[in-house]
Length: 205
Length: 243
Image (cartoon, helix red, strand yellow):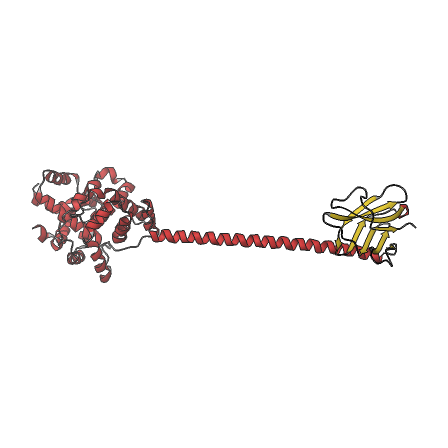
């Protein structure tokens, strides 16, 4: 599996500057809350392309990805009222909503919706995107995370991909990969520890 | 489980992929306000966000943005005015084309009218030529040697009809026309067609067979524009044609 293909460093750097910036979030959130239509145009300009890319990476169909991107932004538009303009991180919220719309779509396609019984909705609560560790969202940390991804073993990368881009639980991963659940849990735990160590471990210690 | 055991599960929890039993454990910690789990979940959410942001970038279709903005009833002013300007230009072009079309139609009608007039004139001249060239045509002149009254010819043909060529015609006047009459040897004058003058000259042809033996004279009077059933004025031309 070719997860996290290398993207040109210059593009990645410029993109991350946009993704991770929080300057201007408060003003944009205030305008979104006031339902100023121009604010929607600004939000789409800021993270529309990335949200679409996340969704497309998951559903692998451009038409469906565009529909789900529209649904994502409308959901943000309708729920921004509960978002804290001063403490919230807007782009991470939009990306999470985008990913969850796509995973929901995948689950509805293969009948996993009832089986997983996981309600992604409560994981999009605006309150979860408040007070995110500013250092974790720095460009330097993102670079280190990308670097760490490339160091993961093939099995570790596989389970990370299945979790982020296919929405599989560890039990489902074990079935998919035809491996014991314990082995899958070890791969997942180890992979996340490596990534976390690079990005946020110091922050939560 | 304690918080230490849960710390490796926060990312999966935030992704919504944690198996139900483990998920319930974290829910329970969060439900009772566990600060360690809250902070752990915040850090996991940050990690997940950065992970998603590393997705290779693709470009959606251009229409997506317009579709999205349209769904909240918003179009950028720039697009609005561009659209309005385009609509106005289209309206001007459409009006100009309509005007051109009307002018073209009007010109075409004029050309058709001229063509009809030319065709009628040509037919009249062809008839005149047939009269003049046919050996059976019998000419009769009138007004010769007189200055003021009209003068000219009446050409008679038993099959072609009667042709009147007149010069020095007095003006018929407004709302009036010239009317030709057949004056038979017995009976009342019979109408033989209306005609107008071209300046002082007139050319009138009545086509169809004529019983020349029963005809005594051809006359012309000035009548109302619609013509009369019987002469209402003194004839300005009387041409005896009796054999």
